[in-house]
Amino acid sequence: MKLVVLILFSLLVAGWIFQSSLRNSGIQNQDTAKSNNMNYNKLTPEEERVIINKGTERPFTGEYDNFYEKGTYVCRRCNTPLYKSDSKFDAGCGWPSFDDAIPGAVTMIPDKDGMRTEIICNNCGAHLGHVFTGEHMTAKDTRYCVNSISLKFIKDSANVNNTEVKTDKAIFAGGCFWGVQYYFQKAKGVVSTQVGYIGGHKDNPTYKEVCSGTTGHVEAMEVTFDPSQTSYEDLAKLFFEIHDFTQTDGQGPDIGEQYLSEIFYLDDNQKATDEKLIKTLSDKGYNVATTLKKATTFWKAEEYHQEYYSKNGHEPYCHVWKKVF
Ligand SMILES: [Zn+2]
Image (tube, rainbow, N blue to C red):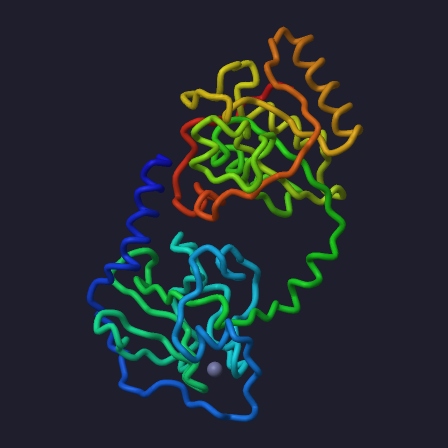
């Protein structure tokens, strides 16, 4: 399954370079930046390189590449609203991608390279990026591939209140992180989940590095929960009930140290709860293979691994829920 994702990702990068023909009816001929308006925001040299001189930021480096908060993206230069977060999707290409723009906000013009179609701000002419169609990545079949540096994000005010809920965290590793996240994101009291890597010796590891089995990391999931609605103990029980905690060499068909069953406790209370649950399971006759480790840095995985099954409408192949408590 993951190999397919990696191949898709490679195709996307190739697609950026070898852009196929555009079948978008919204193409207009318009000259570049309508400049010299005194009301525009002052740009840094790096912003000017992209926005005025039509440069491109390095992929996977932009502020909004891996960014999915609710809100509106406005033009960095003139503050005109251009894209809503609802149309943002993960194309895995290294730049923020949207499948729709706010009506009338952007204009599309043929790029000077004679192949691609450039997107500019309809108000100030700022260079935003390029638009691609025919990739079938979303139902709208359009990818506005935009430089983060051409945008400024304005958060929805409604969302600000949500961040004020007092929350707690827990980190579980139980094999392929897609399957673990699939169950936790549906659990009562869970505010958010993210998959990533923990326990190894390399900073900011990539999926490929972790898969090679040489970095010491395991695939893991960090869950943020509302303690007024659930408890660490409830979530730890769920963890034991969605994977085979007696398997010693991996999880299901996924064999290797990156798939081991481990809990990374964040404090002594969590550790005590884990020990209590493991004793309960041992008393029931299970040989518990799960190890307890003090949490180290949790490195968030690449965006295309996040909420994988929800995004793709599949069911986990490696995890099933089974009542044990
Ligand atoms: Zn603008």
